[in-house]
Length: 183
Image (cartoon, rainbow, N blue to C red; front, top):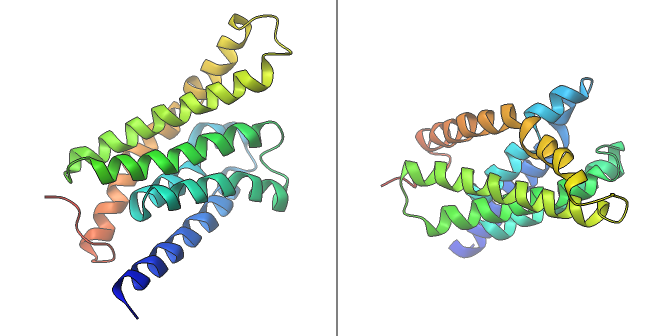
């Protein structure tokens, strides 16, 4: 098997594993919706997929995860599935893109994560506005729901992602499961 075919197969396999995790991890918090909204369990595998496999795979898994989970398990409910689909696709795309273009240092990993989270939250806000503006009295009336959904509720998950994802990548690198990216 040629090296580039092996690399594609490896990325496809990792992407499938990340999609499976994105579908299954919410069951850990599923009984308590408020906990799930705070810890955002679907975000971790999507961000990891972008970092490990690149922007195309990250985007693909991100755009499929929420609708597939909705089809299989009825969660997340409408219209949240639309917001999350946009957000997760942007997470996967940006985490892979930033991690590829930034210098390969540990700080770049954190920068990639933070910029990806900001981009995903902006995408969430934009799709939220696009879907809800016709029913809103004004754009200002959407401000608090957007801030609540994108920052106030999810800040514990953002901190968890910033702490957990680099730790997971370091463990995977030390176990020689993924190649070293740090210089």
